[in-house]
Structures are given as C-alpha cells and as structure tokens.
Length: 348
Ligand code: ATP
Image 1 (cartoon, rainbow, N blue to C red):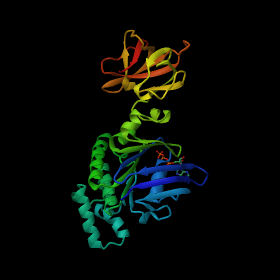
Image 2: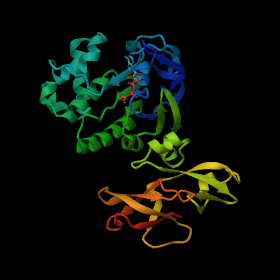
Image 3: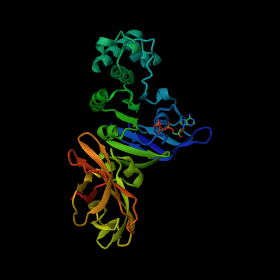
Image 4: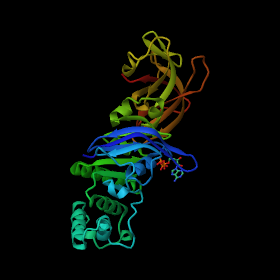
C-alpha cells in the first residue's frame, strides 16, 4: 500500500518564504497524481518534502500508513526523477541504473542483472554500455526512470519529467509514462507547470497557489467545475472569460445583456447576487450578424491557433462604458475582420 497523506504540511525556508502553508492532501494507492500551478507556488518543495529531501517545518507526511516525516530519504521507499535526470555522466547506462542498488549494498552481479532486466523493460538493452552524453533526451529520461524503478519503490516522485524533451518526443514520452505507471501499479506524483500534460496524464490534479491547494479533482472536474476564479483562470489552453454579472430573476445580466443561468450554477445563486460569470472561449459562438440576447462587441485582436482562431472582443459595460474583454474560439475560415462588430452567445 502506498497512499500518501499530508496533514498541515508546512515548509518555511530560511529567510521566511512560506513555500507550503498548512497543506492537507490525500493521494490514493496507485494513483497518477499531478501537482500543477504557477512558478513559485511550491510544487517542487512539496515533492521534495514528500521525498525527504526537504525537512518539513510543521505537519506530517505519511506513506502507506507510516509516518515518515522524520525519516531520511533512503528509507522512505520513494524514488525521485529530477527534471534534468541527474544521471552520472562518467557512468554507463547500466551503472547509472544499478546505482541505487549499490547504495543498498546489493552485490555487483545481482545489481548488474537487475539493471539489465529493468533496462530491457524500458527498451534500453542496446544502450547499456553508453554514457549519458551519447543518448538522446528521451533515452536519458528512460534511463532516469529505469534507475528509479530498479529498487521497486512504493512511490515515484517526478519533477517536470518531460520538460527537457521536444514537443514530439514529449507526446511519445507522455504515453509511455502513463502506460508504465499503469503496468507497475505504483503511486506516482508528478510536478508540472504544463496543464495540458496534467490534464492528459493525471487521474487527479491538485492546483496550487502560494503554498496552498486551491482545488483537487479529476481533469474533468478542474476543467469543467473550477472551484474558484484562480483555478478557472489557470486551467484551459486559453483562459476562461470571467465577466462580472448580476443575477436577475431566473437569468443573469452580463454587460447589459440577459443570459440564462448556466446549468452548473442553478440552485447556487439567488436573485440580486453579484457574481462572476465564467465561460470558456471554446463554449461561445461568434455571429457576424445581430442575434437576440447576444453580447455585442468590437473585434480587437484575432490570433491564429492553427485549426482555429482566438478572437478578442471589447464588450461595452452595463453603463455603456467600454472595456470588458471577452474571448471566443472560432473555427478555421470563420475569423471576423478587425474592427467588425461580433455577437457572442454561449453555446447551448
Ligand atoms: P517552479 O515551477 O518555478 O519550479 P515551484 O512551484 O516548484 O516553482 P518551489 O520551487 O517549490 O516552487 O518554490 C516555492 C517558493 O519557495 C518560491 O517562492 C521559491 O522562491 C522559494 N524557495 C524554493 N527553494 C528555496 C530555498 N532553498 N530557499 C529559500 N526559498 C526557496
């Protein structure tokens, strides 16, 4: 069993930076769990504190029901893969993979056998005698994973494991990592600031900000049901539109236009509430002609996204003043001209 439970976990660095702030989190046995958040929010510190590479200032870390808060990294039964892989440049692939077994005082023949076996599982058999400098980025990443796997840890901790790979290799490595984790059935916690990676790989995601967790959920939950405007603004390839609105009767008024209350918010709001109306640019339609009940605005920017475009419009405020910005994704070939008026309507 390798569930991880963090209770009131706090890390204050010398100098007073509170990198983790009384953080509570439960990660299930066998889960593929992502830590996601902006730079400096405490992701790496959290991973290193679970690994025992940082000493917690307060709170506890339990792994598999065992309180490991005051244990050394070597006896926590976790393996960490670092962003730069941290391979030993002077050692061969085989010796790199065997290294943790050497630390555990496994005999030479047994550890070389084990390293060769692990290398075979990751498709590295032909590379055993090479040194890290003679490998591609993807191969180095596999060696780092093999080294982590060689000791059969209960928990894998991965710090931005794919960030050194180019876009194509990254996609390949993503699929590989997910398959490997499923096959090994180990608990895996990985840090990323790439939300597409987190959404694609993770069973659940914790979105962090300022040493705290703002939401924990499945990729679908954090994408479709963000718990707050921070998560709403952070998740999604284009940021969610967050527009000030007022609940009026059974609808909401946004920039002077009445819209239906979105299904997700029904029952949560009451007449007269001042709210933030969040809607993703992908869930809005843009019309070139006036449509009843649509938000009218002026097209100010059109950005090409490849097979679609992101259109920014300025919507007039409720009192006629300009300045509320709204973004809409439109399919290829449907881009409006700059300066044109567009009518925006949430998709049914
Ligand atoms: P990034 O995505 O940029 O790697 P992160 O979310 O992993 O960021 P951390 O590296 O955990 O963030 O840092 C959290 C906070 O702690 C930051 O404000 C950082 O400056 C600070 N910090 C990290 N390491 C130390 C240290 N050794 N001493 C003092 N402050 C530190």
